[in-house]
Length: 638
Image (cartoon, rainbow, N blue to C red; front, side, top):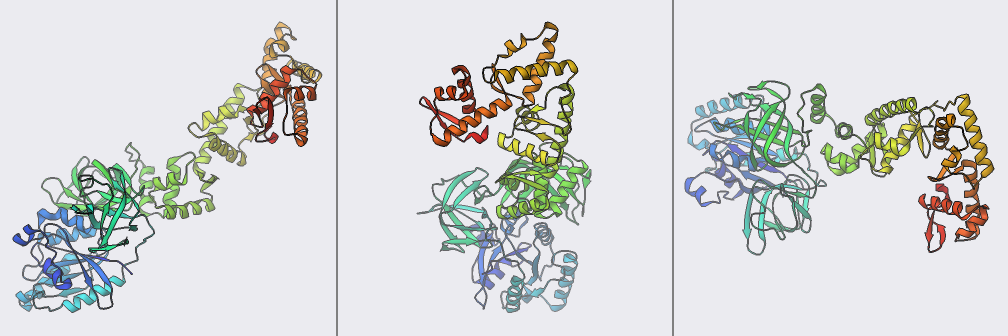
């Protein structure tokens, strides 16, 4: 069943509460002060039943100017609006203000109700209707039905009810699969249930037993009880008037203006980037540094405005802005808000939240404005792609969804689309990299290697660990390796297990260096496993060849011609592979290998056999178990 909330709006004493009672049989003036003064102070809640068995929630919000804050709290979850104008008074200041508020909150459907028709003559009624037509021209109520009623005589009530039922059919279904969100407009204790919070469930569904988060405090608790329109229920759905109690929550832990939501659903921020619009009939000017009252859901706070495109905004203007908040605000991209002037207090406009996690440094650059345009007008896929670029580096799906401010399953679809389009790369199960960032890293990698090859022409390339540190600091090893692999697949670098180099690069030895190289290789071939230390090798060369030896030795180590078992023991790569083959063959028939067996197998001394086995342990190919080695991850790692 579709769950729709209808809200009333209009000037004080224009008959809203009386009309609601006539439609529903429920008196929404629940406070003693309201009954005494004859005005609605807090939003009142009722429901209207239709002949086909359907039901809609109905919010009666205050009309007096000083109660505008409560009116805004009640209108946060409204789908349809009834703008109510008393026939005996016509359009009044708060009629205009309420219409402006409803427009800024993005309410797209509704109708106009002219009440108290039993008090006036038909000629006067025609004048009132003409004034209303001028008022709503260009607003969401332009061209919408206008019904004249008398709650006292009952005239027009059947027609009004029929029109409301017709409008409900045009309201889109709410996505109950989303995480739930309940802006809190009332909190009170109930014996046996503890603290109860009420509001209109504006998104998702909540059930008894769900884990809820109270924001902005971040306190978590289990949902103990759920009520819908005053009746106990196992579940409340988006669009329903809902009351929930949370297990273990103490008095004072929840207050009006807080939000109760599914865990991790909302960002809590002290800065938001927005599209700010000024009402057509506002006489106020918003400048950089202006202080305004912000109304979001049931929360109210002071904010300071920093315009991003213009020096000021006047009536009918709109533009992007950064709002610095005086206190933390739990919110979501796409949320609507209203702003009122600081002094005197009057509604001047509102808008839509575009970025709940803006960069701390304010930017008015072209790229910053373009990013906000994407957040305002782009698809979820475009917004997720923007977020991937902004985050930079390797990111998880959760990181991307949080930055994009898109719900999980919708964000996952966006990630799938971006991956299919090649705009992001999936590096592993939950690791992604923007193609734009990959291209940037590829250029940086190319520049690093150009400089490295120029500085170290006799090295085969930059050590992988050094490359990770310089290019991808802050990423874990597996993520950094995945990025380097992606850069290699672009053809930017050649990559081995140990070094990275530019394609086409090769070591070019001088004739003298070639002689040293050949002499060293000959020595390693003759020594096989019983090799000399680097110091002993250096002693083979004349004093004027020492620098050449150091360069060539470093070169053949970096190229992989020599494998380092320890700082004092290096084996020729071919001899190392032969030794690994001996070990592999041994483990084909045995589960264990002793040091003595390895020594005898290679025909070398205990010193070299132990260095070789410890090298295999370091690669996690084998591991020491007591006095013997057993296979760990296997010799394929060598």
